[in-house]
Amino acid sequence: MEPKEKSDFIRDIINDDLKTNKFNGRVHTRFPPEPNGYLHIGHAKSICLNSGLAKDYNGKFNLRFDDTNPEKEEQEYVDSIVDDVRWLGGNFEDRILFASDYFGQMYQWAVELINKGKAFVCDLTADQVRESRGTLTEPGKESPYRNRSVEENLDLLDRMRKGEYPDGSKTLRAKIDMASPNFNLRDPIMYRIVHAGHHRQGNQWCIYPTYDWAHGLEDSIEGITHSICTLEFENHRPLYDWFLDALGIYHPQQIEFARLNVSYTVLSKRKLLRLVQEKHVSGWDDPRMPTIVGYRRRGYTSEAIRNFCDMIGVARRDSVIDVALLEYSIREDLNTHAQRAMAVLHPIKIVITNYPEGKSEELDAVNNPENESAGTRKIPFGREIYIEQDDFREVPPPKYYRLSPGTEVRLRYAYIIKCEKVMQDEKGNVVELHCTYDPETRSGLPNANRKVKSTIHWVSARHAVDAEVRLYDRLFVKENPDDVEEGKDFLSNMNPASLQVLTRCKLESMLASSKPGDRFQFERLGYFAADIKEHSASRLVFNRIVTLKDAWTKIELKGQKK
Ligand code: ATP
Ligand code: MG
Image 1 (cartoon, rainbow, N blue to C red):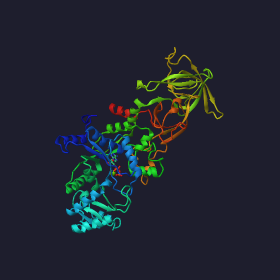
Image 2: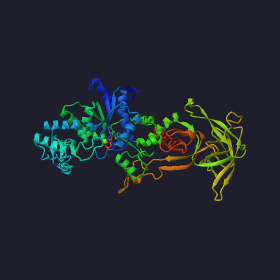
Image 3: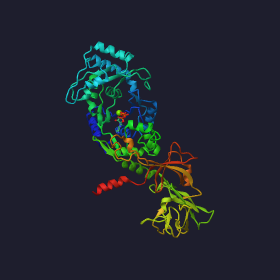
Image 4: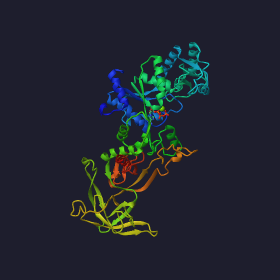
């Protein structure tokens, strides 16, 4: 898509910068995750935004790990993030970068700020620093160590780096303004002492830079032009600018946008980690998780996620996006791409008593009515078939037009049948139906167009293959999972029925050769994907991606009517 077609405040800024040649016509963005968890749909928004800008403006996009906090970071997360960004279509070429590779350069710049009288080593503890920061109405108190000489500061920083001091005993702080109305400028901390091994640097460092000190330097080193972050960093921008100006180095532009929130969904890494660690879900890739690995396993396409991110756009005001919009975008995508198939999830057997024993035939079925080039396939039909339990009622309620004693329905792509007899076990449960069929009602025969009130799906009992099918619902019952009673937490809003495992499903024979990750529309039931972990030729396992019912268009239509 041409940049002109999309329009938002970030593109306005970039267009202006291109006009004034601010960055020599360059656009270079980045996605800077901290490798302390798996990516979620909020990160997808940032990835689509940043990589989309690079693409539309013929620029570049970096994947950069903000690995400045050794205690929570792991290689497992790095690997999954690389994989997810690639899957989402973020084109970082060969630029997988690590902030930790810049630690040496950052240290030199810290020395430079000390030499300029703009940084000092402070012996206050973290608590003391916090207490001396002041309030909104009162200025903070200057540290008693603020006026150390340059020499003393250089010596102390050197010894901090060499490991002479215990964790938390000293920090390096910028010397800015303890009376600034912006707290972030009240002599912020640049380095902390943390004696912890780093997943890439090993034990080379025992001082680690803070986000505020490191982030602008990382952007500057990489020649980033537009450093896009979420709104909570707006008040940090003056500090971002201060560090770069104090050093007089290349200066990218920080731009803030509103983070994505989705209804019925938690997107805090801390909470997602709890769901995993406390085993409320089967793992980061549980198909109910809002993680990229979760959506992938569920069967979402990257196309659908990108379209969703395009639809919601970028804004400067926080809002909550209806999860139904995400479901709508996956439906839209699969409607045109997913092969149709027939599957019966809660089977009940029908014997067609006037169909010759031992006979079977092949009927034509359309692969995708939205896409003629997908063609047709043969589906087997025989004397015994399965239909959904729900498509039969012994005592039909008013306006129930599916099968009941004495009534007729059409079998999709096949014949009209009539229910003649209901077989029950000794407890009165319906176990089998005996029906007759009208042999003239198949496609191409004289009564092919005879009308009955409803059409249902089915599979041939002799040809059907067994499968396990997993149905998912929202993980939380409340639109805002954090809306809890006092003393409870978000876990109290979990949906106890978010997973339903059906182990007796009967599928159209064609699905026996499906491969992990293949997606289908099971007619009338929704879109399903063969599980990428557990599905195999000997054990078919399908996940429901989404139902067919589209809550989103209804919401929109309702809105229009008003
Ligand atoms: P934390 O920093 O608390 O660990 P985080 O979600 O900010 O959590 P990061 O790894 O720092 O995690 O995020 C990487 C990038 O993704 C950041 O630039 C951040 O702005 C962006 N991001 C994170 N969450 C969202 C969201 N919900 N919507 C849009 N962008 C997001
Ligand atoms: Mg963050």
